[in-house]
Length: 238
Image 1 (cartoon, rainbow, N blue to C red):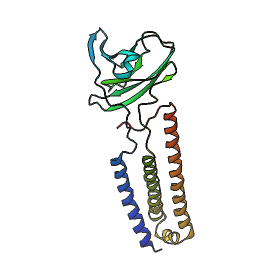
Image 2 (cartoon, rainbow, N blue to C red):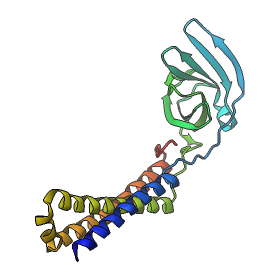
Image 3 (tube, rainbow, N blue to C red):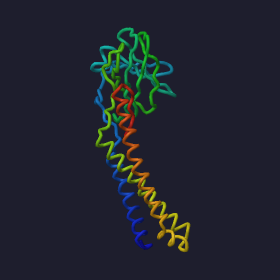
Image 4 (cartoon, rainbow, N blue to C red):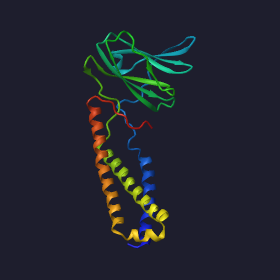
């Protein structure tokens, strides 16, 4: 190929890299989807102390059978949550979904406790957390909810892996050509572009991108399996 063709291919690759980057941001393929929508839990009262403001709420849905109330404690320096159990449990796990003031999720905590009393341990919250939903996970080895975050679909995983791998190849292609033209200079770049090693570098970049595709798919599918078997899933909180 002529030098002009390689330059044209590099320019097209750079344009495709930018287009795919924008598309990836717009699609938000890793954005979390939840099994439960936000519940506007019933507010009970605020209790003001010398060092904190404590807002008490009833829980909602299935959770109320096991955790009746919770309190969000706000101090000058931090914010934390304490739950009130309906009885003592040998073991209990639950999810704390944290919401901003605009009701968007900013984090999910999975809490596990053994040999409980009437109240839970103190659970630190994000400083931006304005509201929470407490969702029961398992009680005394009886599983009620495996998770609150839906696993990614296979199609989303594959599309994310394809875009990621395509960006990797395009980026390597552009960087390779830029290094040859800008650093090597005309005297060395022209012979190299016509050399077999140039084609080997392009093929190696493509092979690395294909390898990255399969590794990405495998990693995300493994994460989904872990979530379905009781592990915690976490992608992007957007």
